[in-house]
Length: 82
Image (tube, rainbow, N blue to C red; front, side, top):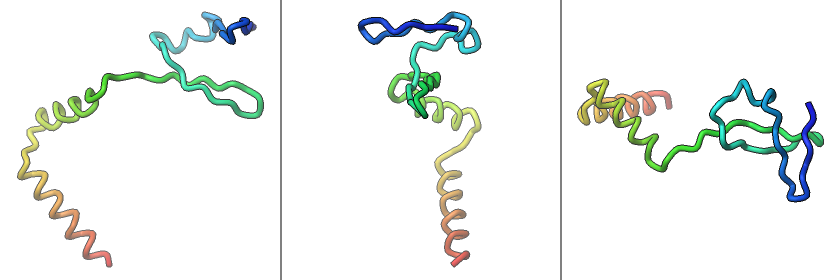
């Protein structure tokens, strides 16, 4: 496949090259040994990951007291390894 860089430094990627990664609008671009490497990036709204974690915690039925017990357990184990 061949792609041409325009006078504005833009490159149109061939449709066939992108068929395995549909619905991707953004790419992380790096270079290595003179080659361009494009990695698909998913852009999410700020706070949406935290909201997803909170929904999962609620769905699992985890309560604040459960977190307190887990923290106490982890701190006790950490102290016993010294």
